[in-house]
View (tube, rainbow, N blue to C red):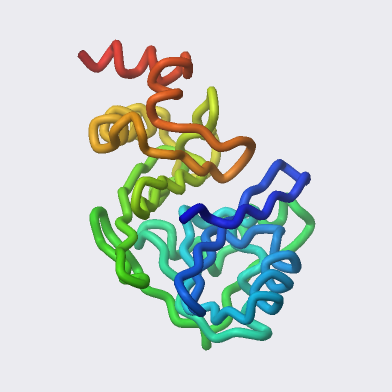
Length: 213
């Protein structure tokens, strides 16, 4: 089963939807809320969970739009939960906006290797700090939703609040130790890739893994 990909040209933002029977989950509903709503309604799905790889505005903005129609639970690593109610931390002001998650939206804080039941499978959170302190990737079957940790040919930036180049490099070493080459990577921006492709072609990954030996 492949995820449904919603792509927004502003900052090349990706959001993802996974469906099992009539239930669906959405990962990082940044600026793609209208398209997500249209797809859910067209296919008569029920949105039960929203998973966040981290708490930046371009990955969380349209939680509010989805919440106007559906009741769901939000999942995020505990270190990034404060970003859901702080404009300085989530950088919504950089987009001329503001974001405060509503009090009536349930939030579950996760930690490394926590799992989320979905259909006959589970999603597992892998904590990969670096882009933010709570940045995480979710593994579902052979699909890794990497947020802003790993991109095709690139890595996430570390110059924003709670970012750390040292933590990111450790996370890359860990991530490439946890995942096999066949794992498909669905990043928060730009194109899809795989662990094997990035191990072979991503110059940042190659340098980090070499230095870690």
